[in-house]
Amino acid sequence: MNISEILNKQSQFFDSEKTRNSSYLKALLKALRDEIVNREEDIYNALYKDFKKSKFETFLSEIGIVLSELDLAIKHIHKWSKPKRVKPSMLNFPSTDYIYSEPYGTVLIIGPWNYPFQLALAPAIAAITAGNTVVIKPSELTPNTSKLVEEILIKVFQKEHITVVQGGVQETTELLAQKWDYIFFTGSVPVGKIVAKAAAQHMTPVTLELGGKNPCIIDETVNLKLVARRLVWGKFVNAGQTCIAPDYLLVKTEIKTSLINHLIKEIENAYTENPEDSSDYPRIINSKNLERLTRMLSDSKIAYGGNINKADNYLSPTLIDEPSLDSDVMKDEIFGPILPILTYSNEADLKTIISCYEKPLAFYVFSKNKRFAKKLMSQYCFGGGTINDTMIHFGNHRLPFGGVGESGIGAYHGRLGFDTFTHQKAVIIKGNWLDIPMRYAPYKNKITQLKSMFKWLS
Ligand code: NAD
Image (cartoon, rainbow, N blue to C red; front, top):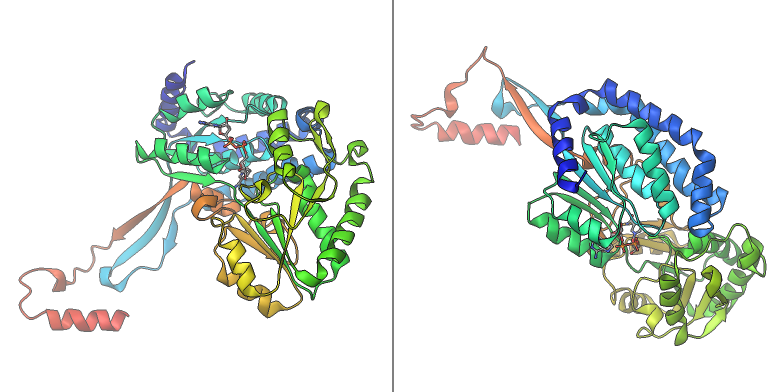
């Protein structure tokens, strides 16, 4: 089937209104859950083959998150799908007012390679729960996981409901040329701009989950051992290939040396002195990305790490001491296991450095000074963040996950994912038992009455 045939079939399926039946969808979501649980070992194997991701990280950041999204959707689908009654306005008295959550129709989901299972399936679960049909284009850089995602979905869904289209730039370009009712993209800023342009041709609404340079500020009040432990986890999970990993540190000048020593200790505690032999430390996704990261090291002072094995796309956890802002490592999002450590003396320094970059996806502050930490959280514009840890704001489905400015448009997770994939339609049922004549012409001097009514309502 070519792409326009797939889309036609999905439109017909959507028009049949089968996807408006929440009991039918709930049964499919349950079947998907069972299939994922049945294929658990295959999922571990696929991610290991793609970039040596450990079982623990695969469960934590891929399977576990997808299962939680499924559980939530299964539990709430009936409630979420029902029209929600809201308080009416006295201006319309008598009336009963509702918000209908209406599925958009045909949805295109484009996924990245860094969490290839979760970032293809979590948005798809939200889109299906909301009553849409879905085409997923997973990443071509994780062929084993992308193939498995397709196998799992084929087992559960009719093709008219969900289809996976495999491929790279050419296939995505063909998909983007079609008229979709919604496009959900996770990936880089440059490709996000391509997606936004293509969507604009058809006035298609989009969610863009992008990236950026996420700052992490550490002041002198902290417990350095604890901070180092949390930073090593947040930065080197998935070998730093995480959109919300701290990109660079901004450390109060007097604690820099001590923090570096603690970071080294914690890296070795987590992955031993030779992380290449640790079964917990993944690889860089491909040689192109390894070369990109290697170039970032060329004009920097390496404080620790920097070991490379090209044959295995391996780059060890690496610390960079005080890179200049025009060095390669500080130009673009790093998206790998390299952590630049910059210093600051006062809040003006922070502003000078952070303002060099677009609005980040994530923002972190480590400090025992709550006033200082909260002030920074309000002062800067970013997608989401955490005080005294990294990345954990992702884990609460009650919090919106998304960027702002160049780090993205829109948000999802949990109920917000359902809302993302539905149009919120206002519907009023007007009562016939009373017809207040004030709004009808001739208006004569009714404006005085009208003004007092607005005053009374406000
Ligand atoms: P990418 O933009 O290169 O690729 C994403 C998808 O777009 C892939 O499916 C790919 O096939 C497709 N694509 C690539 N080039 C294209 C083109 N020219 N035209 C049309 N389609 C194209 O991103 P990636 O390398 O897979 O992922 C890394 C980026 O994703 C990082 O910037 C990271 O911050 C971001 N990211 C963001 C989130 C988030 O939730 N905000 C999550 C993960 C990754």
